[in-house]
Structures are given as structure tokens and as C-alpha cells.
Image (cartoon, rainbow, N blue to C red):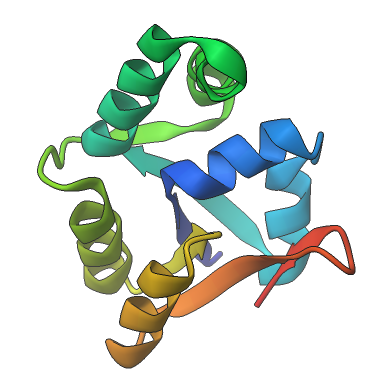
Length: 127
């Protein structure tokens, strides 16, 4: 049985809260198969820093930290720059990268990583 590593960045997790999207189900449909959802320690750190700032994004970050990550995600111990870490992990595992960041998407595609991104018109994540 093939399990695919799916690495999520901060932007995708925050969008899931903002748009009220079941990001795990969306990604499962896009990948077609069993997935292992992963975030890096650097993404957790970014979310934690955002949650401390308050406001709408801070509340969304706190929800991700308290409700999504403990239930659905494994945490990889990469703790550098979040964008670099998620790209490195997706590339090293042959996995997918889930992002809403257009610059990170371009970097990932250039390095051969399959990207799952949000299509607002469809209200879902697709490859």
C-alpha cells in the first residue's frame, strides 16, 4: 500500500480556516490514496508567532494549532525557514506540497515537487 507524504505550509492551513474548508478531505481527493499529512516545526513556530499577535489571522493560527495539527498532522523536526523546510521535506520524501503561496509554488514546481494549491473558483485544493 502506497502512502503519500503531503507537506502543508502555513498559508494553506490558514486558508483552510479562513474559507472553512476541510483541507484534509480536499487533499485526499486531489491525491487519491492514503496520505500522511505533515507540517514542519518551522510551520508550527510561524503559526504560534501569528497566534500571539492576535487579530483575525492570529485566531485562525490558534485554531490550526489547537484543533487541526494535534488531530491530523505529524510534525517533522525541520526548524529553519518555513518555506525552505516544507520544500525540502516534500522533495526528499517524493511527496506533495500544499500551499497558497505563489512564489513557493513556483519554487516547488521548478524543483520537481508536485504542488497542491487552492483554486478559489472551485473552492478546493487541486494539483
